[in-house]
Image (tube, rainbow, N blue to C red; front, side, top):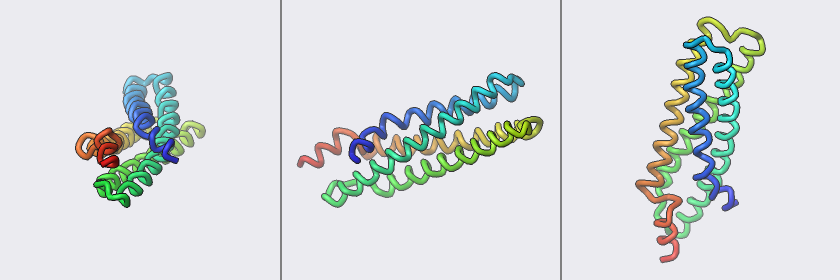
Length: 157
């Protein structure tokens, strides 16, 4: 499963981009009262949730690799990994629930009026979770060297 762990740094950029685009298109679609932008937002939300699931799956594998390295004596900041993992899980659950709720409202033709403005607030709250997940993930790479050649050098010592 090291293969999946190695994909994590590549995959994480998809949910960041897609869920950020979702937030932007959700706001624009509602404020501009543009049905096409609203449909694009819904598509970005769907694709963002799928990519977030992939990122969490590969991230869980990366966490297992980190735990195994820690057992070998490599200095790994498991607390920092845990914080990143927590935010990633909050993000996937939040956006999954948002997708289900939004899809239900669209299918029932109730995605209108003040409900739409509630989704601006929810999209921004979700964007905050994406930001925090990325912030904590970036700290793992740039502060602790997780997933970089710095960690590979520690292993070979």
